[in-house]
Length: 184
Image (cartoon, rainbow, N blue to C red):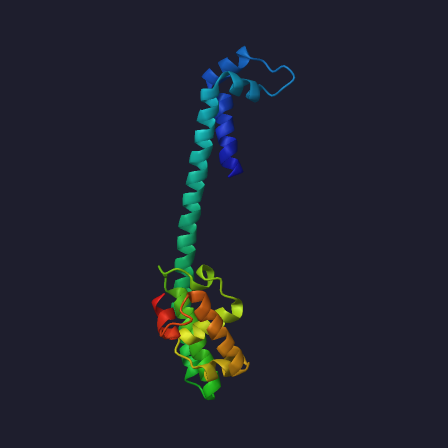
């Protein structure tokens, strides 16, 4: 970005019209640019517009790079990581280990699929533990299973489920939490 701004400044220094006008107002104890800007406000506006255009171009490039990076991450998850997890799941494992592999796969798939939906955790200010519980509820796990997976009591999970329902505005309503989370 500094290189872009430097190029714009160099352009002002090499422009014959600007140089002619700058020589007409020599610096007297201050910056010649400041004096030039005072006497020619149009040039200041032009410089600001060029800076704004430069910033917009840089922001557009940054967005393009982010989109490209998202595609690379999505491809790596779907083509490299998920197949190995599928193979791992087919090995001899107990039910808890298979459940954990399923949860990892589900979360990776969710990361890999570009989502238009709003991020529930940010929108409703859920705590990290509430986010974990909400993800497990969304995947169809029951309170007892979630308590086993997160290594805590069922009362703790019930507390977090109640807190999630309150933050989502469905506390005293007959709405299935898992179905609601899937629809958000």
